[in-house]
Image 1 (cartoon, rainbow, N blue to C red):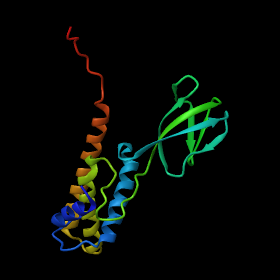
Image 2: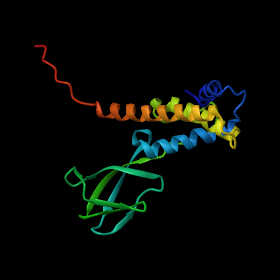
Image 3: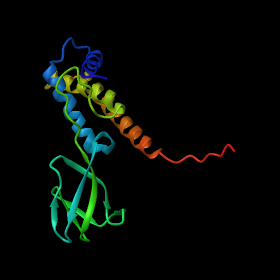
Image 4: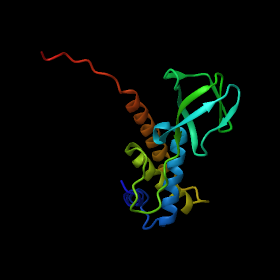
Length: 180
């Protein structure tokens, strides 16, 4: 679904004739950012190597949202003995660590762009854009369209987060019998 497709869907849901492109692009980017905070599967996964000294704080990248896991490169084992505060990380044991973390998705900038977020969240983006436009138009009015769109958006958001979480958990090895 491109941003243009999201716009068409949002226009259909709201019944409006027009949503300004600049607003729509802002809506899509804002919703993508909020989804990454609520569902790490909506984010982009990155990896860095940190040479840590025991008890010293090390800065994490500026686009860091959450740490998925830390692996001690010396023995290739997952390490749970670290603290995170104010975008910094501290390890209990000195050594080299591979830190896998979540970042924000790249933002869209035109109607031809496809949001780089998981496809599961595209309908959520469209409903969120429809709600945000209705909220802008009816800012001071107590309008049923606004309330209905907000309800649909929140329901779709929860459903997409649940689906993305279940999809992520469903990866498992399947045993099969040898043919010969």
